[in-house]
Length: 464
Image 1 (cartoon, rainbow, N blue to C red):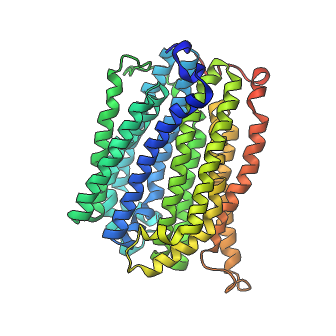
Image 2 (cartoon, helix red, strand yellow):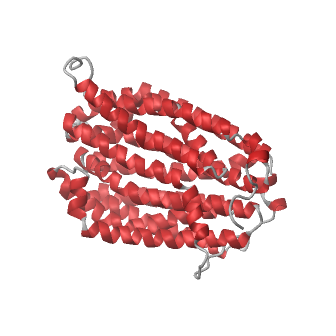
């Protein structure tokens, strides 16, 4: 792909940005819809306990998702830089190494999780009454993750090589297939959580089959090569994707902390109520990641080509997009939280309905800025500034929320404040985290703004 034919390097800014962002957002909206509909089926046809069981297993799943995102985003950014610098061999090496690492790591995870399942459930603080449901779900999903994670990595590289439509079609087909299968397995045939897991597994096979069509494209730049010797490409790419690893693994840790605090104060109903709110947090993240995926690709390639003005323009466009998304989501959750929670819960789950409404009132301000924080961290990764990107990701994803959650929980449990605040008020830590992180992210991005790249940063930071 020469620079003359590459729209990322030469196309008009707004049409080019939306050419990459819209398919990515459509694909991730489809992926989000699958998760939301899964939650609706599970909550309405299996029950609030099943909804809580799925949430309790999330911290374990995020371990493998964190590695996958580090591989996929770090690798695709590195490949995009090599493509922009017109070095297709190095880009193909990163592509091949990343796919092999994703498959091998996930297979190892599946085997290890089977061997140490009882220990893992104790570590996750799964209540005894929910262990059968969690085991039913995770027993199938652990094997589906091998296909799911490898497909995720392939998706990022297919987009990086100028095939966003194919990548989006694969996600949409997989998501629609998952929803259709849920309607049979969970709703009609009453397979419970096992049905939801089988739906995910089968849909991932269909998605992987479609993405493999990329290997038959005559326009592709990337080629899979089995024999690899220079694994330095892969390890450099992983380091550059470390902020994405931190973002994902931290999310799992924070969900574990929240579940621990909620079980101690509100029991399983508290976890079920938070499960409802977590779906909207997930929706906001997926919409933002749709924009971030486009920004990764566009900034990394223009960074490799030295187009600094285009980097600034793409960054500004991305920030405006996610700020608008955040405003819409925060207002929707603030004004219509009762109606929204009703989509996930049966009418008889009155207590969980009420708790979900109260939780929504505590967390809605985070949607105003969480997307901007992700975009700024993404920008730092794309210009090969992994250390400040990792600092932003660590503050937002782990250090601030963990410290604030425990601090507020302790403070509000103090005798002098009992009765003045609710059991769920410690969740104010989540919006506070986002607003504090925003100040730090702005500082780093101003320090590394594109106008400074000419004099301070090398044009091709990765070994060619």
